[in-house]
Image (cartoon, rainbow, N blue to C red; front, top):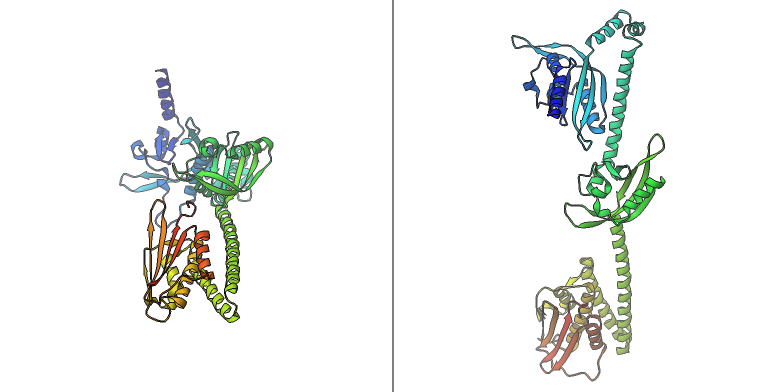
Length: 503
């Protein structure tokens, strides 16, 4: 009851004060006013409550807001942003007075305003209390003296109002407006900088301010006014809390380059690894005491990942070049052993190198991500006439190493068929069937069957082509191959795992 009585006393005192007061909420809408305010503005309480205070200053369509509106809005914004009181030494605001006939006349008035923040328990500004003093007569006197004795208005006015107080107030207000403009420009630069920046205050590193890039980095979370350990709990154990504590304790900046950090960038999402270039710099007060940390940096994740991809590509290229050179060397040595005539050696060697080149062309078109089995088959057999080949099987994606090995195998099979088998002069045909079995441990089965060609017999010795096929299947592809030489044609049955690591 005592608290209620005190509250009622305060409300009564507020309303009974002869000085005009009004109370605004954080959205600058009327939340209350005393009787003196209603008297000087000639308004009714019920007409004002809940209405935007700046509504009285609205400009017409396409018109710029008047100077007094800009001054008032800037003062309110300063109070909301800084949490500190602000003063307007002189504000020109004519009072609209409705006449009996419904017309509006304006009483030209000048005011001195004080805007005081009202805060909740957490320190957040919830309301603004405006106290105004009517200085119209003083302003009129100043102007009158200026018109009568423009060469000496300063001394005359000083005598009338005591030591130039009015002039000093005007000067202070002009300085405040200039400083506020500069503050806003600096704040705009701060908020629009492409790198991330934040201001942390005190030993708990409370986040006072951050720009849009910082907000994007942390997933647009509401972190203003929160200690860093509460705002970004996922940083625990990553060292960043310790770095901030060290800067606050020693006053020495800390710099990180391409530092990995795991952050939650979506609400309740998984942690994402980002790489940052950043610096923590101490913030000192006028006495030199360290009171906070200024955070500045750039997200360089794309640059780091691009460098890693480039290194991986260079390593992969080196590996592929070495393998290709080793394959070329092996082809050259084995071809030389099987061909004593330089001309036949050159022809056979060239055809095998072209086969290798065809498969590389396929892989280049897919940026070495792989090739389809049917494409590899068509590339290696098209020279012998596709009308003499029947290819039957599903789409099977081959990785680069598998595509190169199978390309060499199909080239040897097609070359042997053209020399000795179904693709030699005549009406023979080649049927190639393939399928994938056991989806849990997938294996690719390929059957190369020749028909309608000359009868074939088991060779007395294995040539390079047979050895290349067996070596590629067993060594490079970790599979098995069976070659059958029958009277009705040659057949090769190849089985290879599609998951070589499981094999």
